Image 1: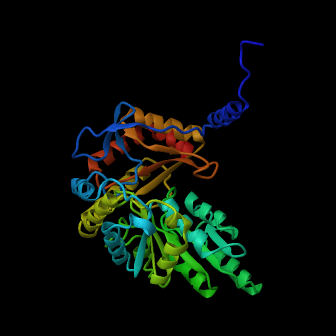
Image 2: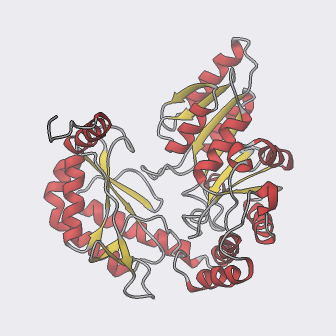
Image 3: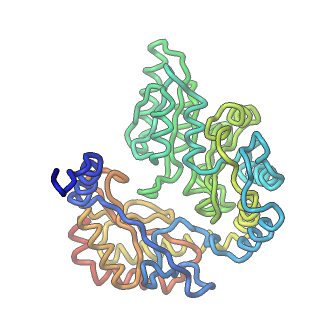
Length: 408
């Protein structure tokens, strides 16, 4: 027998997958956050051994490291412990969960809300509970992966309409009903699209759904807490009410700075999810301490409007500076500001140049975005300062010739 073992076919297969990703510039790696050198500055972290100002997180209101939120978490952990101990329907539904659900429902103007452990699970619950085999799901082409998976896993007939095109959706729904098909139809869309930063045409989508008897569910993960005078998100901005959008999904790990998600709607809708949604019934509830921390964050978001105003100011300042540099930004007035560079290699190179200047900006590549649209995804937080925004603009100015050429 030879002393050299034959290559394991499983490891060979896995290595082929990894090598292919690397060759196409699509390999990802985790960055290690080692700490925050200045407690008062939530935007500066030691990452992979280097102090960096982050412009790629989703902590839009700067609440993820707010001491009041942290103190609520600690106090609740002392009272309730570190875990819920079970699913909501066994013994995991604590008083903190219940109070948070009621406060979230009031915040978004719905009769009831149900907590989920992640936004992914909330979207899967909506998609797989409201429709099934033989029914129909329609989705915006640029929807988040969790919405797409919700549609695919529902077993319904799945179609995607062109991005933001309510007329195309209306035509498809009209054709469906004209054919005599009266099965359930569900339209799923982001409120704010996470990679482009633009808003869904919610009012127009709602009109199409109402005209052709279809459900409309909006995942407002990147809008709630951030957009609107009250922080009501995309629906407040668009002037859409609960009759127009019967199903609203929100996450807690972005503007509210904690973890988890919720679905809000009518009493009957939420009760059906509680009874039937597999991602609710068959998973452990959030730690009650996280729910307590979220209640504090929600109260801060409701009362401290200056946080939303500061984010809007940063966005306006950045867009004016970027346009002066000749950089082509997508038409977004949310905290998400994408700079399209085309190829994965161009996005990675620009991200590395910024990192060398002490700035962390993520390079976003396929399959997260369509081929040919790799980009820098720049995001802003109320925790940023104007001087940090100017520092980012100065760094982009040094790279402007290459960036302008790649983003043309």
